[in-house]
Length: 312
Image (cartoon, rainbow, N blue to C red):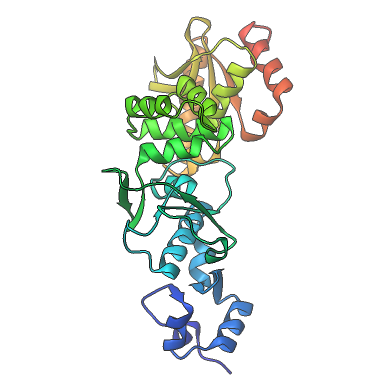
């Protein structure tokens, strides 16, 4: 009755503005039908993506796609009109964001009417004339890493900001520049969170889970372990997420991302368990933490203290 998806939608691309679909001979009724069937997904007003492409994407890729859809729909091509900022810029820079919505944040030099942006857009106003304040990432203009981190920390919760700051420092954000920017903003909204995050950030953290584990240990008043500790066993070198070396206690965060992004799950877990067995034979004790346990604080505290005190 109908042609295939590839016959209906222009080949060689996956993202279209409404007028581009019109030019391909696909008009509003057909667009509505394709959306209902799932062959097209409406990302925002006037912008669509091929359904099979959207379905196959991971959540963080979808978040980037929403920014790309905004850029495609508004024909954003230069830093002179608007730049992506705050959490949108963080996504473009590839920084970890935890429990943050997909709102599109843009910064412009002049205040625009609230009706000129969609409901998914959060506009900010600030001078963009500072040299080096704007960079292009993935072909889209956005604030620099340091400016992005400062903007985000001033609007996010402490834990969200700490996750972001840890990763930014790990990726090479300039801590001196961040501290200078913080000092210049004394008294402004959100600066207390920014200052606190700068004081407690650790570039050694490799995942949001590790950051939140460290934050929880500190908040519960538990003696902080060392991060990313290397120890040797007959199975070779083993790098522990956290360790109380004198007590021979290791704490490992078992988040799925840690395994799924870097190597086949079964092989990584097998090698981890081999090394853990070898270290256990040398007197080490292990605490393994999963995501859900980070939000059962009393249970977490009891378990960690029991092991540290040698009662389990």
